[in-house]
Image (cartoon, rainbow, N blue to C red; front, side, top):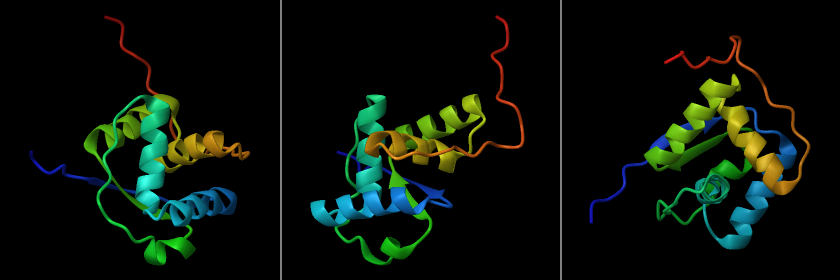
Length: 120
């Protein structure tokens, strides 16, 4: 079976409450932040998720941003939601995590309006 090529996504300005919840879960589960976030997003969106196989949470614990490794389908879904909603990709990820952990969060919007579907 071919090895999955992972896409890297940088989630910036992660609010402390969300970061704390994700890090706590990663430490408790003995996995990476990417695995926690990827697993939550995949479950919420009905996609499959396969761990990158890394085991260390490492230096990412103290960061105000997450560097996530995820399958292309998950990265594409983040991009699609971002484009349709006008939210930044970082806000799309944090919004889903906030809903999962029941943490209040106000998503950041891009400087442009969401794209409308062209009439067929």
